[in-house]
Image (cartoon, rainbow, N blue to C red; front, side):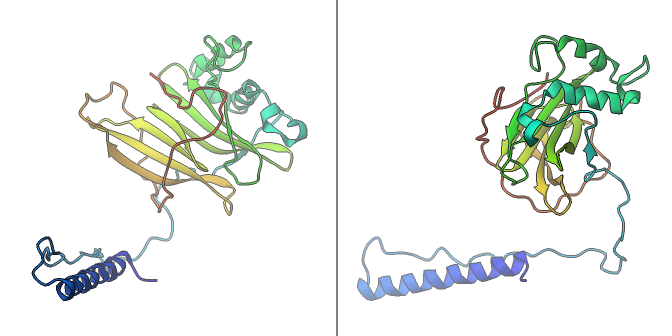
Length: 268
């Protein structure tokens, strides 16, 4: 398959050929007409990618493990009729806390206050001091059934956990997990887009997670830094991995889900 440079090259030649044909036709129809098309000059030649260090042996394994295809079954939570919308999101977060006590339980646990605040979730997620945010439902896996996008605050601190759950063989399975300081979270088609503040003034990180049927997980398909305008750097910069994959991604758009909360989640 031809590369980007070859495609741009063919496209440039086609544009130039079309322009010449139009000019010839205009001259034949009305030579000397005022308002006739005029050439804008030669089109610059597109510069293709240049491979650096071609003698270097390609790596066969990653240098860092990010856990981008880690999945986890939620234990102890049943799914009535395989409908994840009938499951209490608070129970799912409690199940994660029980499965990872070192993160949530005990005086030295980094997110000990999250476990303590779960007592405030009697009225459900998104109420009062409950750390569990309002849930969102969208078919992200393409199986015709809603999946669950869930967020909860990791306390103390300003970090928020974002999770995606689906139903596999009558069990709830976590197919995406990420923690960061958030600027916003969006649903775009069958992708989840997470925006996080950057330590570079005027920029933010944007990560796009997309369902991959072969891996059975949401994969990090796009990781980029975007300009947002002039602003002061945040007091709590985003914690970034030392390495992250960035294969081509599908274009993001405006979410059209019908969530049980506001259309975008953000933390202070």
